[in-house]
Amino acid sequence: MGFISIGHTLKTFGVKGELKIEVNPSFLPDLEKAPAVFFLEKGKHLPYFLQSVKPGNHPVILLEDISSKEAAHRFNSKEIFLRAADIDPAHLEVDESNDLIYGQLIGYTIIDSAQGKIGVIENIEAYPQQEMASMKKGDDFILIPLNEHFILEIDKEKEEVLMELPEGLI
Image 1 (spheres, rainbow, N blue to C red):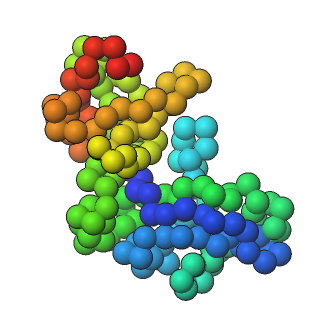
Image 2: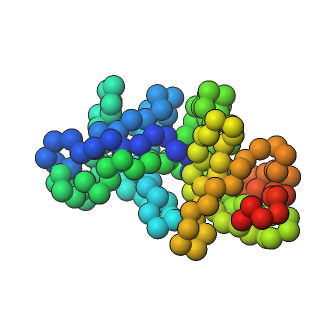
């Protein structure tokens, strides 16, 4: 199952555990219809069911089972994901053309032609030269450059990216 980053939390709002968020405007209708948002915790996308979404310049969300400012505090400054299945494909096309080229690869496994499985992409980060896949390998986070010179194939069904990485990169 693929996940798409739609924005991030800013900080707690009020005393009931609400969170002020910043979300890509093209994904706001999807957020309002989604049953849950996902946060990356210990390398996995964990669901948190939405109790309410208040639209605005900075929307405010309330998660089920989070009922105090203290309980919501742990979600400050975290990236927010939706399941790809919860996003209207037309919104993805807009996002891909205006934002990250490889943003849809979050959750895919990178496989190097020589070394085999490298890891699961947790995030895509934009750098001036290119986009980088961020993943955890052991206790370390590593960055893998995403560009057409290294990518051999993207298998959407298996959610895998076959790459030929330069020797010594990992």
